[in-house]
Amino acid sequence: MFFAVIASLTLYIMDDRLDYFGQVRSLISSVVYPVQVTAALPADFATWLSTFFQDREQLQERIRVLEASQQLMSARLQRLQALERENLRLRELLGSSFRLQERIQIAELLAVDSDPFSQQVILDKGQRFGVYVGQPVLDAHGVMGQVSEVSLFSSRVVLLTDPNHSIPVQINRNGLRGVVFGRGPSEQLKMDYMPHNADVRVGDLVVTSGLGGIFPTGYPVGVVTEVSFPAGKPFAEIAISPAANLGTSREVMLVLPGERIEFDLPEPSVEMPEFLGIEEIEAGGLQ
Amino acid sequence: MATTAPGRNISVIWFSLLLALILMIIPLPEILRFARPEWLGMFLIYWAMALPQRVSIGVAWFVGILMDALSGTTLGVHAFAYALIVFLVARFHLQLRQYPLWQQALTILSLVMIVQLILLLASSMPHQWQVWMPAVTSTLVWPVVYALLRKTRRTFQVS
Image (cartoon, rainbow over all chains, first blue to last red; front, side, top):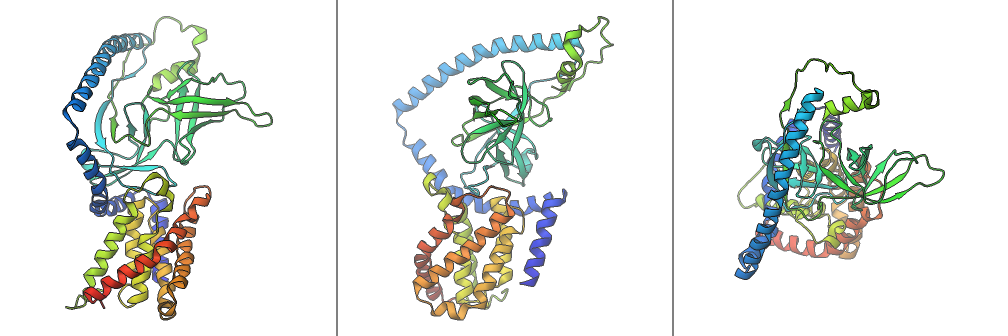
């Protein structure tokens, strides 16, 4: 018992405090990967059965719906590409750097449960596919979270709703910046440390701000559902419902960072107008 | 524990512990999410009670490390918790064997509560009452686990 106590304590402290200990951890996680795959088998089999026994009409209907939405999306994409070009040109004029479109990799969730109190999921892609700690994870509707631990064949993702997770955001309508925190299984997020006079309204879209350097800019995080300014408390209370389907998404996207193009332009010869302010220019450069 | 003498069927123990590990992470319906019985803890308790010379603190510690990796907790938390309960069970295994089943189940309640308490102390989560649900469900399923494992032990003559 004495040895067990000492060994547990040593491991606990090493895992908690030492960075390079992550390799040992990832090795142990790789060892238990077969257990995870076996545990996911019944759920996988159920999904396989339900796809196997879909009838023809259902499938045709689905193809029709998907094709329609595909058309809609590609029409939107055309406009977006034109806008992106324009944005790039304008930024070139301003002399600030711009991140090219991020590349994306698809991964699937392993159907296993984690500790129900921490909001985490496990993906079927690991080190072998170049997944790294801190990599942003999206689904079709918005940001899901970030990779917290990588083993050889799988990786663990902390969701936005985890109480230990926070993400730098801005309000899409007016560019107001803030930080959004998870609140545990309640499936709601909160935006803390916003002053009482902050211009936040119910229905505002909240997107990633790109500050902090982990999440790319401009991906939807959620929609403001509740704003209150309780008297006697220093900050506003803002509730946000996440845009991503945190509970139901099975396929997720891992974002690979795009290359950053630096424009080595000479200082613009025109005087910067006063109202732009240093802060805004710097924020532009960070994106 | 490493003695794999013929006829002892030690592999059955390892196989059952592997099964318990799988049961610990197999997806459950939403209602039961917080009420997952502590399968691994119960299996370890049974083997430590029946064969304390086979399932020692070392085995519990090793399986606990695997569980830490599976559940994403800091390494050593489950290991310590399982080592502790196996230590307690091994200490009192002669008495535990004599207990009627309901009294054993109550022992399980307190042992699983110890495990949950250690997990709670090590995590930074705020305390919620659901934390204690696994202890209750473990108590309820203990008679079944006990019967099944005893049957297994006798069938395969694990000693």
